[in-house]
Length: 322
Image 1 (cartoon, rainbow, N blue to C red):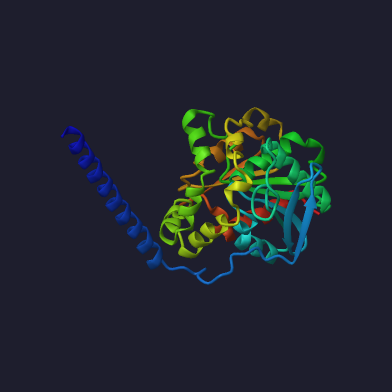
Image 2 (tube, rainbow, N blue to C red):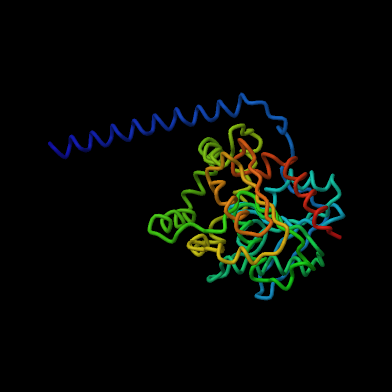
């Protein structure tokens, strides 16, 4: 009898949680449906005029797309994303006279899968390979989320390319510290490899609600839908175990050695990588600047593409790119 009562209680709790989730999802969907969306109907694919397949020294393959001409800007996306994350930003930069180059990082988009022991430093090597293969000179390297850590790692591990290939860094919603390597973060990293999580993201209702958490206070449905769809292009089987190898990374001790113009941007409403991570980067790199974008979330390249483009162009001028 006691067991029956417990089972009934658990069933009641489960029903209550399901009902609460339904109410929460309905609220999110109504919010997105009723908010004005100037970007509704916009194309969220990278506006490529040229594409490249670059082979790495270890036999990997990096998919790269570019548009425009002028000062070079290399865009590095975050975990679970692809170069299409920068579709809006790329158009803004092209309009402002930049050569915009974006790469699918290894394990994501149309680049090859990650090798068994591949880690952050492998991504840094890939970025250096792209800079060299395309002959980019005095480029501004822009990293979003995990891409910001890659940009920092590139500056730390490959000082010989600074100045000639890299003139400055723009780090968006980034941190120099990976999540601590603890039991709970290992479990979260493992969850990123579960096919069931991927299937939930593909659900028309649940997927939109999951993607919404990446945005700030004024999320637009077109942006949320685009972020969800971009995730479909990076099936977890191509990078299984990779998130686990990013745990415990800490680049903070080396940050004072970076001698480049650096701009760290963060959204005040970022619930994925808190803005304190960007502020710490700016505090530790000599001469670096920190900009907080009020109300923006984690997807600043989409949410604030005009502001971000203007700040990048300003840095290209300050860095005397060629």
